[in-house]
Image (tube, rainbow, N blue to C red; front, side, top):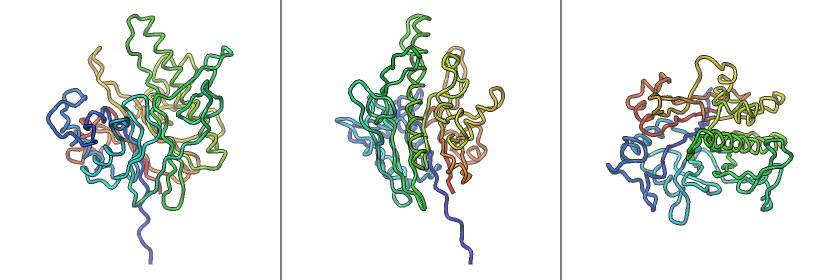
Amino acid sequence: MGGDLPRPIRLATYNVEWFNALFDDAGHPQDDAEPSHRYGISRDRQLSALRTVFAALDADGIMVIEAPDTGSRRSTVTALERFAASAGIRARKALVGFPSETEQEIAFLYDPDRVAARHDPQGAPSPPRGAHGSPRFDTTFRYDLDADGVSEQIRFSKPPLEVALAVPGRDLRLIGVHAKSKAAHGHHSPAEFLRLSIDNRRKQLAECIWLRQRVDIHLDSGDSVIVMGDLNDGPGLDEYEKLFGRSGVEVVLGTTLPAERQLFDPHASMELSQRIGLAPSTARFYVPTPEQWLEALLDFIMVSPDIAARAPHWRIWHPLDDPAVARTEGLSQALLDASDHFPVTMDLP
């Protein structure tokens, strides 16, 4: 007799704005009416929205971008596991990699009954002045970005999280990433704005080159690799891309390489194939001048060719564009209250 097909493995990436501000130092969610760091949203309202979203995702593994802080007084793992318990979700175990220089960590929340996960960083630590190739992500990378014959030193402010993930029937390599923001802050003149914008673009692109070199190492080893998270970039997203010839997204995908070396994300492919017209988006920001909402494709789940060949199903949980979200009572508003980014999921047969 035939049985039901095995349930797909669902992986998600979700950038949760100001997640850290929703917990006290002991990692307890602060369900009160005090303001959250999201404009016009209280802490209990944001937490309630996040519980609704995480429950709706019902994912086996979630790469949490901007996860709560790890430091001398705070624990990412404690905060996320207490949040998961309060939400009643299956993905109730958390792991974190190298701590960041900010209050925003990259963490992986997963269902231990369905998958097994461990932090498994690759690459050798670099010497103090850095190394070429692909050193360990918490050390220093050297690369000549401006072709002046001198390689610059690059460090991740948020080192990517490398996860060895065992799912039924196969092993996967996950790399959770939160690349450098290209937004220019703290400028006092148009010239300073231009300089900061170019510097930030250069740093973001260097991080993507470093990441791509690690991807190449995995492909050479025959690994099934998935890059997931917020790349703070997309093809054609800003005018400074012209100075460097391509976006960081294109670098990580490997769009100039043979097909067997390229990663695949259907939303990135849509963006690359039509620079004008309808485009998917994973983030929504309010811009005060002029007063409007700006949407952008910043969050991705990129997979190696062997995974793409299994025909996974990708989905952006957009509160306004996804009909299934709109049909689920309360979910659209929860997505808008929870974060300025929207989750992306991939169901892997």
